[in-house]
Image: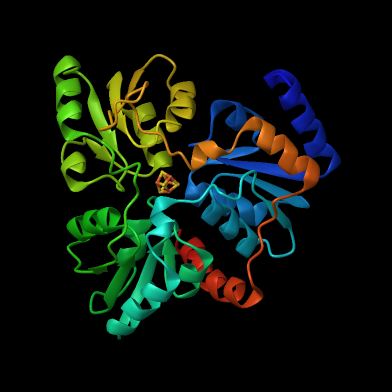
Length: 310
Ligand code: SF4
């Protein structure tokens, strides 16, 4: 089926089934085009609370759809490809994390939203890259903190807040794929470009950045900055929405170590969702995301604490 016909059919099905499509900025352009809402993890979590539909099709990765299910236990949440996981979430297995937590008694647990429902259920507060600094700063100074699963975001928060935290040793393969050598070469070619980066990137990449923030924060920054050229260090899917907001500005994806055709970083998990899979998923209302009730109830508390603080 060609792309336009597929899009038409998806929009029709969406109406018939009273469904809503929430898509992450890292999804392919065609999916972003037919989505009701496109955003980052925080925006999507907030949107998931307000959804007035029977079905939520989540065009993103598994932990995001799980979060939507936890926030909407009575709605059907479907994900186009169940294999759309996340290397960062996978780097924090619940049994190992439980032991880690026991080794650090008297610590509260703050987890980045990129983790499984089981890890959220072991947490006190969830955060996203948009609100991580605010959440950590909201915790009394004398309270000891475990931060998981992203060590790069954890290090960045420690630098910014001056707080010591115990970090879980996890990371995202996409944000660790940026090559500092290629980035510096690119800067020589474009001396007028500003580097902007997502805090999941490694410290040496963050040190080169003029602005560090969440995907939504980066989009706002390029809109408001007087610069006309940016090198963008996060998943390349963000460029679609960003370019729509600043059609007259030049956006260059930060280069990765890999010599891939576009030389930029793409999340293979996010790109598992395709327009065809979105259509099949909506048609069959499957694969459906299910979270055991006990986990769902425990995971809801730290997510709600985050939403209250945001
Ligand atoms: S970009 Fe990284 S953190 Fe985001 S979904 Fe992909 S693997 Fe996970």
